[in-house]
Length: 68
Image (spheres, rainbow, N blue to C red):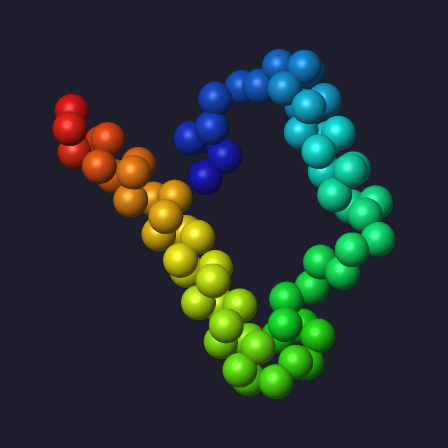
């Protein structure tokens, strides 16, 4: 699995670690509705939103890939 990823520079690693630190030290609750034991309707709404965001991201990626 990891062999498929190219080597990264220390600068790139530092950039990622700053992002992770900023997100990890946030006081915001990062858990999903499922992890918070919320009602089924909240879990379904969250999952539908996640799916919609994923599709909005991947559709242009596939469209561009199919043009080449």
